[in-house]
Length: 297
Image 1 (cartoon, rainbow, N blue to C red):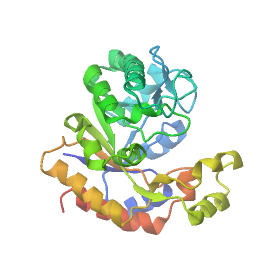
Image 2: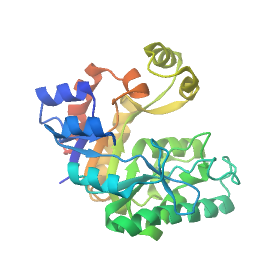
Image 3: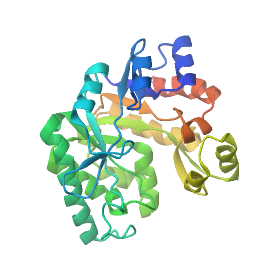
Image 4: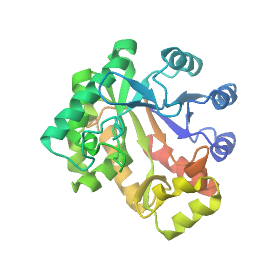
């Protein structure tokens, strides 16, 4: 049966203590101190910060900047009973300097598909295809954006045999960037191989949001430019999001999409942008509602 997880944060922990049936477990960062603190008393699983690179088979930890440490990943999996290793399909321009970030041509798609397949296969060889999932990305100015093409994501999942980590908000943002209808975009994704799902709200970062993020003091000044006048995920769910999520959950409930082992709400969290945009009242209102929707209530 599908579980419902929430990004770990102090407000989410307070909700758990008051309403332990609101969700099933915490989604945790790959941080030793946080994992040790939470897992001692509460259920949780880890979302690993692993990314594809440039196609030479290297998988990199986006937090430590070092190549994947298999022993460290395995230790975390054992400690938390995390069943699957995830990798983000977000190739950087730094690792692919020959590719144009705005090139969505068949040639660019073929090149980045081959490179990401080689990198994902590194995890598949070590953990087995059944224990690896690849996450679709939303694209950005410092990434090779041909990676967000739905046929590219589909080809990687099919060729490597791994599972699909379906980030719904990433798909919506990618479709917006490509000028595609979002449901037509999603129809080309490998939802029959869905193993995990991520959920957030999407909002435009207007001046109010920009002021809030800046005034929080939680981000360094050189990081603020990322959060200006753009559509952004990891924000509270608004009416348009509720409507879209009702459709998406319906696809699972009717069997049109494979049921994932876990669906995780990524609003709120620890540090930086997550804390700057987090509101405990919103968590208390939206998490129980999401749980009811996911469970078909």
